Image (tube, rainbow, N blue to C red):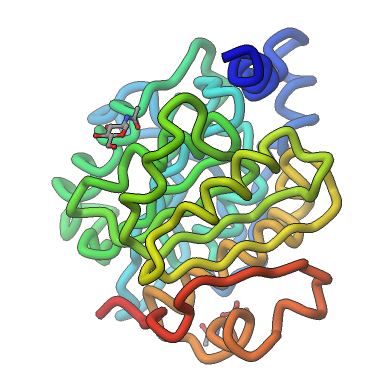
Amino acid sequence: MKVNSIIVAAFAGITSASPTLLQERQGGSAASGDGPYGPISVSTDSALANHAIYIPTANTGTAKLPVLVWGEGGCTSDGSSNARFLNAVASYGYLVVASGAPGGRGTTTAAMMTASIDFAVKVAGTGRYVNIDATKVMAAGFSCGGVEAMAMSWDPRVKTIGIFSSGLLTNYTTASTFTKPIIYIIGGSNDVAYQNAERDFKALPAGTPAWKGNLPLGHGGDLNQANGGKFGRAGIAWMEFLFRGNQTAKNYFLADGYKVDGWDVQTHALDQLKPIV
Ligand SMILES: *[C@@H]1O[C@H](CO)[C@@H](O)[C@H](O)[C@H]1NC(C)=O
Ligand SMILES: *[C@@H]1O[C@H](CO)[C@@H](O)[C@H](O)[C@H]1NC(C)=O
């Protein structure tokens, strides 16, 4: 119990400082994204209060855009706190719906992530969402947001889970029920989430395709560096392989492509990791 309380406190993270400082420290708000449809700026939609939207404004042609629903570190309700990474994701041709309005305050809940999925499913094919493919949804998050993403494991609309510097807190036997492909992007033994992530990874069912990479950068790694850093690169490659069958992205995981970024890797059932069509 004591350990869990400490981790909860650590995951709760930074809550003071001015919004501007916080935003700069946590990932900036300027337009960015190194993908073919960048740069991207965060936006909102009046049909979905308390959320942030990242979507290409460039012409994406006939490309179908899968969906990422995202929860922030500390479960802070600032949907732009990981903007550099989320801009980068959208610039590769994705709709990203993050819990919390840009610059928002307060605390997110897993229900807000479910609302993001409901929204994506509802708007897909309409207006600026005309090319959205809501049959391809990844739920992911950083730290406390990763715990929210794990709570989406049982939502049939979610096809894969992304855990950035996170692990289960009190619900710690639950990983043995995870069956969807899951990626763990962790900051090494100095990451406060390290022990929980290692434990959860070991608890996964033998047949669940999973990739776990550690980089010794601590909690959150370089996620808030330009385009989400190496943490972001691994996350985007995961989506590009699973949702698009992208060969370069496949090689990142299955042909040691990750080695150029220095990840310390463990995998489960990667032979079962296949694009979701
Ligand atoms: C805890 O795990 C159970 C299944 O073992 C699941 O039904 C429940 O939603 C989980 N709670 C959270 C908050 O993830
Ligand atoms: C394939 O994915 C990689 C990221 O892993 C990306 O850099 C590249 O642009 C993608 N290629 C295509 C054709 O989409």
